[in-house]
Image 1 (cartoon, rainbow over the protein chains, first blue to last red):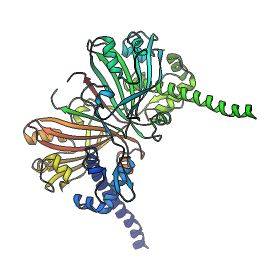
Image 2: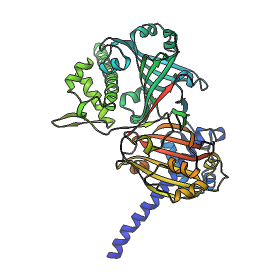
Image 3: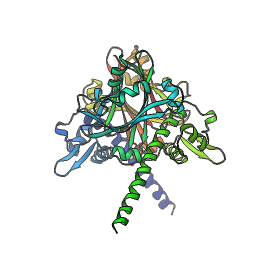
Length: 256
Length: 256
């Protein structure tokens, strides 16, 4: 009986440890393959055979399979019968080291269009009023847009703008122009800087429906308060980017 | 019959529209409350009564409830019987406009410790070798760490370092010191810059277990290639931050 009990215990424990090591190895491989996918390292978007990947990375076929499962779970590759594992769902690079509108930062990747879901004046809630430097409950322009790249949904943007500039936005071509561009033209001066906060959140049901992703999908949430060159805050935005379509890129420096 | 059929259709459509508008209003309110939570706007971490929020923001009680549901879903508030809605699960700000190690960027928030899960030489896979500028399959030091702030898991970091510097890391206090600090000391020069990519992904089962979050939770994935001041790449990292514990902050400028 004791021998049997030991066996009962050690087999699952050893198996669990093997599974853990394989999981670590799979994640490690998935991270490397992910980078290669992003940088277009696979000609024609087709990944090498599992055996080839195993040889290249000196890992078992099981580890390769598990790594490919991880990437499939992230929606960046899929298996196509007769072809193999192929890259799907390109992520587009959004510059993070310079203040740019979506159409500006993605101009090499195609055309950004905006579906304006809501636009109109609303009484500024206290935290919006404070950040935009206007009296509480005075009207600000509220804009809700779904933004698309080449017709594919990328983000859902909620925007608040002080009314003196907002009035000008009401007659502007919001469907085809970044708010940044319009604000610079209306204000007669360039934008200066923006305070940003980036978080990863799970999509609520309604945002998921608008972005056409499953509920709970990972979303990059960007909160951004943008100032004109003279320092005046003019644009408060809450942006939800589809996690499977956007990556943020920057070059950071050690010294300020 | 036709009248009944119209009724059958219009009632659900009107209800669906009301639901949509309420969902939009709830998300809008949730975004504003989220910012207030982050900036410590609620004394004692207790949110105002639902009625008070409704009056302050000029929205219905239903909208307030739905907004609080969204924030509960994100794990940033919870309902406590006899107290009300309280802030839980603080997010810590990680600087994104300067290259800093985790202990450096969070030094005002507490003590960062590192559980070293794996450390040792591995033959560099091709994409790692290429990015670190070493010959393929030569050994590099591989380090896997779980990083904690005040004992709470924050991130899972996979790190590759060329062996000439890696040998020095083997004997160092990896539990209590940022790799950045150690590299600068070993190399006898400061770090220079890093190329970073940030994405939102859903946690795979194994990463979720290590980070102590439910499978599928939103994770901030940071890929970072760091160079010494002389330009040599010395540190390739793949970092998964818990989405509910970290936000990235930066000040962006319009001109370069």
